[in-house]
Length: 502
Ligand code: ARG
Image (cartoon, rainbow, N blue to C red; front, top):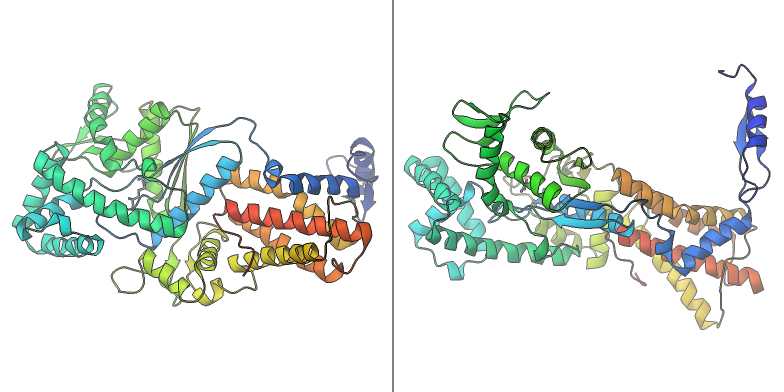
C-alpha cells in the first residue's frame, strides 16, 4: 500500500534484492505476494550435524554475558512448602538452566522467609510449652505453628508478648536467636529434602533469607530519610513512589521492619554487591504490585540504576480438578509433598516429575492450571511423559541399529518432506532457547519440543529407518540421533530427565 504497487511486484523486487543464495534455492513468489524460501538440504543437514556433534553448541550464546540474579523458591520457615512454592521452584530452576546454557552467570537467591512476625509467636509458644527443641522435627514445627497461630488470634496478652519477641529477635537478643536458629535448621532440612526430590539446582549456598538483610535495614532508613526520599507518615517511615497510591513501608510505627524494606535492601545488595545486570523475581502473580513498588523505590533511591533491569515473573494458581485453588485450610492436598506423592502413586519418580514440571511450564505462566494427575501423566498428548516417551523411542531405534551393526555418522540425505521438516525444526533449537532466555516464557520451549516429537513420529511413519539401506539408512539414523540429543537437551533445560527407557 505504501509503495503504491501491486504486492506481487514488490515481492519480486524484494526477491531480487534479498541475497540468501548460500542458504536457499531461488526465492519463489507465491499467491498474492508471498515469498517462499526453500532451504538447501545441505544447509539443513549442516545445522543438524552441528547439533549431533554437540547439542549445546546449537544454543545461541548471548552477545554479552550478564550476571543474572533469580529470586525463586523462597519458602517460609516453620511452614511447609505449599503448591505455590512448587511453581516458583520449578519455574526458577528452568530459568536458571536456560540462562546458564545461554552463557550467563546465574546467581540464584533463595529469599527464605526466616525473619517475619511468625517467629514472635513461635518462640513464645515454645517457651510456654517448654518444648524440647532437639526433638523438634518438621511435622512438629508445623503443628507448633498451628497452635501458636490459634493462640495469637484468641489471646491478646500472648499477641503482645509475640510482638515484643520479634523486636528482641531483630535487635539481636541471644537466647531468642538460639531458638530461632534451631527453627531455621529444622526447616532447611525440609526444604533440602524437597529440592532433592524435585531434582532442582538449589543448594544451601543460594539461601539469602530475609534475616540476611537485617543488618542493612537501619542504614537504609537513615540514608533515605536524610536524603528526603523517605518521610514520616502516621508515625511510620515510608517512601512514596510515582504512580503508586500507597507508599512502601520502611519502618512501621512500632519500629519494626517488614517485607517491603527487606526487599529494598535485597535489591540494593543484588545491584551493588552482586553487581547484577538483571534481577528476576519468581512468585505468584498476586505479589506483582509489591515488586513494582519496591523496584520503583530502589530506583528512586539510586540503589538500582538504569543499567540493571528488574523483572517480576508472576505465575497463576494451581487448581484442583474441581477448578478451585488448592488451599491449605480446606484440607485438600495443598502441600508440595502431597502433590508429589499423588503423582508418584501413578508413575515412577522421573515420569511423575516430568508430568508436574511440564504441566507447570507448558502454559503461559500467568495462567492457572489444573493439577490433574491422569491427564498430566498420559504418554499421549502434550505432556512431559509423551516427550520422554519420544526420546526413549529414538533411543530404542538407535540401540536396535547398533545391535544390527549399523553405523551412522552424519545427516547427508534430506529428500523426503518428513526428513526436511524434522531437520528444519532441529535447526531452530538454538533460536528457541534464546527466545526463552530473553522473554522468560518456557512454554515456547515446550511447544517447540512437542512439535519436534510430533515431527519425529511423522518421520518414522513416512521414512523407514531400519528397513532402509546404505547412505539413506545411515543418514536417517543420524537424524534420529540428533533428534534424541535435542529432545534430551531441551528437556534438560526444563529440568526434566530423559530416561532411555520408559
Ligand atoms: N517468602 C515469600 C512467600 O512465600 C516469597 C518471597 C519472594 N521473594 C522476595 N524477595 N520477596 O510468599
